[in-house]
Image (tube, rainbow, N blue to C red; front, side, top):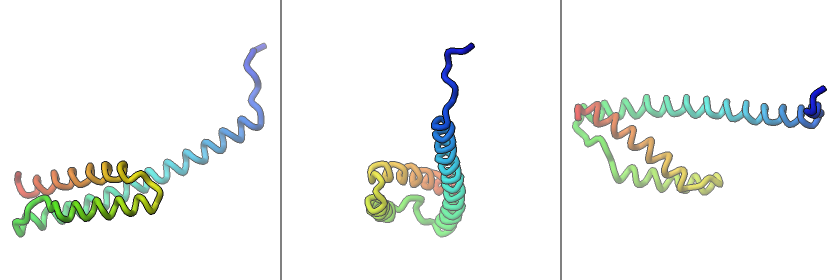
Length: 105
């Protein structure tokens, strides 16, 4: 006979609750990936256009406006604006890298 306690109904309910939360997180993660993929498809087109018309890969003024806008959205959504800015900066840096590649740099 084992010294382990037998699982209770509370443990089963907790496991089901955790599984439900995790399923929601998995769905949100999938949506984020699809949204990022769509965003990068569009920014890839922007990079190709910028290369065609010889615009610079980066637009610091737009980046600044975007960061300010996303920080405000984050505050409104009760999300840490510092985290949001770091996340957006990571995305912007990757987009610029793609634009430089499209330009041949």
